[in-house]
Image (cartoon, rainbow, N blue to C red):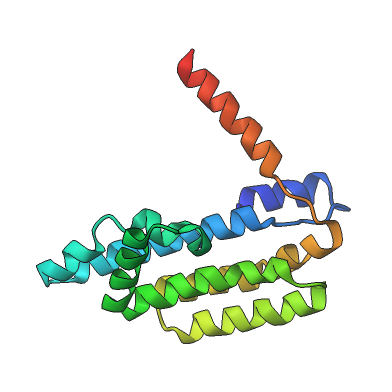
Length: 168
């Protein structure tokens, strides 16, 4: 939710509706979860628990339904059992995706409001801050139900361009 982007759109295209697609919302939450993971790791004094938390970034950030390997599932479950804030953040990440699975904007608003409430009640500072950001940008998240646009293809093209530049 770049303030520069929002300001630019509002000043250059005041009639435009801002739509924040799920890719950017989930990415911002993934960044938040990664910071929580780092905080938890650095606060943990028990070396055995730190060992369990080490190298769990990918497991925490990927789609939970996409983890089929029993070894990886067990590793994720063990890491989540060790730390309640990390587990709360992870399960809220999985739940956030439900916002875009609703049949209409009104139901999505209910799910989003509930998600924000749960994140705020978690008392996890980084998660509370993220919830506050979502609350401030709720209009653009829910606008997706009116326009259902995504920047996924544009992001893909941008990544291909970056790759070609690196290879040149």
